[in-house]
Image 1 (tube, rainbow, N blue to C red):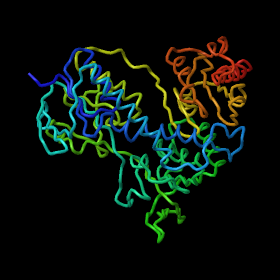
Image 2: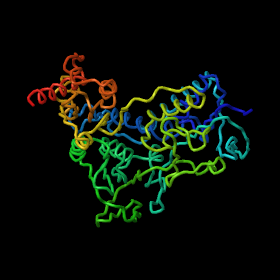
Image 3: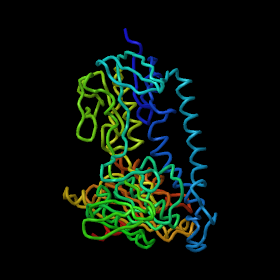
Image 4: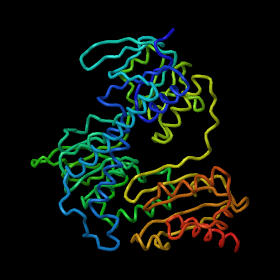
Length: 464
């Protein structure tokens, strides 16, 4: 007999969903969390904080109203770090309260401390005071997530040079910011600070960024960044980072250019937070980024009773998919086979403007040699867009000429991460262009863009 039927290490999106699902099945569950409060990286330094900061910035800066009142318009003239953090802490307190109540009402036990395996069925939990407790479990889910990659050449100091976890508690609002790494996290923070009229320089060693997104969408997004004076340094490797006499970070690039800013954010990659788990005692290995390999259908590791889910298993590293992975793992552990996941799920990038995509990009469609046609809708073409004062934003839809089926939807602009779900539903239900042509959408809404883009593609296909 084991102390618990399932032990979950980590209380982020995958851990919390797995714990609650196992509890719903009548199993005894323990969640081990080394942080001071439950919620994991998602609640305390990742998803929720960055999106809360984004919403606060858009509200206080008057960003959404500038289409009417001009670029100088602000709801609050002097925005400081304290203004950003006030809403952040309130939101995080609420998230933790909801999660603790969810665990309580489902009978999920929690233990605060750092976990490490001592055998395939036993872990040792070390509290902040140094007390050790050993518990055994019939099944385990490793959901420890990731932490920022911190290379030796970056002089992190918590004052002027930050990683992506530290930036949510920034001590002051800078007038200029260099962001190293044009991945999802880097792009989100670069555009959030740009919306505050901070002079931002985005540095990326590759010649392109966010390559999994449709190129036409990225071109539209890039045009808007340049229009806001965001300096892009693509194809520029960082040779060295040092401090000037005034304490400002100086970023020297491999092409000879120098970027001097008040603050620097290093957001180039994350690594699995697995180094303290003593995984060797459980018979597990990790890759060079500290990530675990699992069966994509069951989420089992090479040790059958140990599962892993969320960012610690790598791509796609989204809170939404992590939640589903946790649920699937818990179901499989107790003999309940969940239905197979849908073929397509949406990506959401909470930049300013936000982007969201589902299905195949135009590049993927062409690679598969599928005859296709695209439909485009500009948000400024919709009445709702006029009401909101939107000058930018677009939706791109891709259809098969042969079967008329929807192949992909790609959106950049206000509300993109909400709008995408209409396309997601039609895509997974194998719907065709006829859905968008024949159906009526509320007026005035941004969702009308589906009708406009659908008609645009239909007219092209009819002529062909």
